[in-house]
Image 1 (cartoon, rainbow, N blue to C red):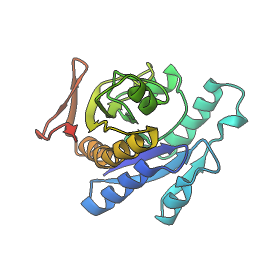
Image 2 (cartoon, rainbow, N blue to C red; image 1 turned 90 degrees about the vertical axis):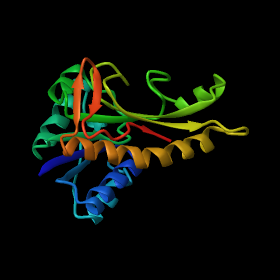
Image 3 (tube, rainbow, N blue to C red; image 1 turned 90 degrees about the horizontal axis):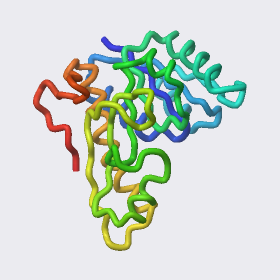
Length: 208
């Protein structure tokens, strides 16, 4: 049985989707804890209501990124996770932190990486005249919004779309894709070779 720790900064809708899928599908895993860098993160209440341990490591209490990351890693490691899942965790992590969890930390980013790393992805896709947008699940590396791609979801950009409409459409896909990617990890169905991720059971790594 694998242990999963999830990091959030806000509502944690992807965290909710993962928690629900883990229970409904009977994964060989448990959600050991949900940790936030914000004391007011709404997702903490959801986790607690489902009997999941919660913790807060407030980034504002630390003088620099390195000291925050060191304390965050200490708290995370108290739950001995096999997998660390970033679900709307809005902090840039130090190379030391990412190395510590190399090969066992997943993130979801709201674009079709490597396009539109960073923030405001949907607005930037609209301004660029893209015909499609989407989201990417990837293993985390020291380079922001890079790392081996586990799965991608593609959504059409429709006439009249604004940032809110496009974001909502992509988020619906995220809620299907991210739990699937996490399940693959806990079932030992992912392998990284030459920077590419293989799904060993032959399931599609594309969603739409």
